[in-house]
Length: 189
Image (cartoon, rainbow, N blue to C red):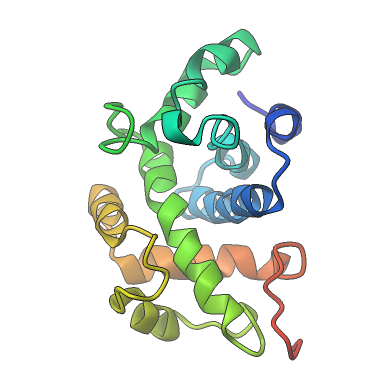
């Protein structure tokens, strides 16, 4: 099983851009919350979440084409590599998410982008963000326009959950780390 320590070592050997590291942390904390929701190993899911964009900085136009072999060679278990590959399903891979971990990663990768954008607009950041406010922004296609709502909806459908429910889990999972992920806001609560 992939450990958080190993995931950080591998990821940080390839990724240096602050915004990509921040995204990895957002996904990591959201995945930890999803693991708790499903009664799974929190650290394991966080590790997979942190490592999911391993090759993105060096190969943005060939995302996930430079992931599988290097991670397998580094000793990452095949099921964890498969989970990472599945977050690109229908975008840059044909690996369909099957497990709850895979479906969660596929969903929260885009979802955390909208949560982050929404929280950054608020005086108290994510600390007082409610899912109702998030959903207003989610429905506004011009807001955080690069975050693909259809992928989020498809992921929620795969999970058998609503966008509201998954967003609530992710927001709650990210809140305790507001300072670390830069989402305390301008008027810290």
